[in-house]
Length: 216
Image 1 (tube, rainbow, N blue to C red):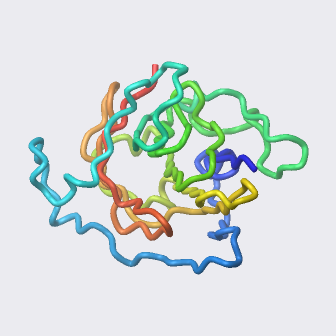
Image 2 (spheres, rainbow, N blue to C red):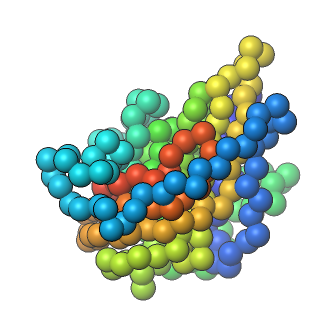
C-alpha cells in the first residue's frame, strides 16, 4: 500500500485549527512520545557545526523547483507560497476538501521538512513505506519575521510518518497535529531558517534546525 502525505499536509491549508487526532495505524506497535525537546537557550548559530544542533541540521532542498525525485534517505526542507501550490484533488471519499476554496493568503509560506518524496514541484507527493516522515507548517505574512511561534496554535503545524514495510508490502502510517515551538531566525525572499523545539513525535525526532530554500 502506498501511503500519502496529502491528508496531513492539508493541516497547513486550513484557516481555522481543527481538532486533530494523533494516531499510528498499527495496533501492534506501542506509541512512544518523546518529552525531550531542544532547549532554545542552548542553541547558538555556528556555521562550523560545533553547536548542539549541528548533528540535527536539515539542508535546503537541492532540487528546489525541479521535477527530480530526491534521495529518500536525505532530509530536506523547502518553502512554497500558498499561491503557487498545485491544485489538490483528494477524491470524493476524503473529507479534506480540494485545492479550491481556501482563504489562506496566497503569500503565506508552506514550509515542509521531510525525508520523503515531497518537493517544490510536488509538495503533496505520496510517501513510500520505510521510516519516511514529514513536518509542515504555514507562515502567514504577518508572522514572516524572526520570533518564537506556537507550531499548532499559530502555524497549523502537522506531521506524518510511515513504518517499515510488512512482508505483504504495506506498512503502518500515522501523524497529526504538531505541538511545540518554531524559533524563526531568518526569513527573506530566498530562505527560511529556524529551529523546531519541544515537538513530541514518535519514531523520529522533529526537533531539527533547518534552512528551507524558497521554491521558484
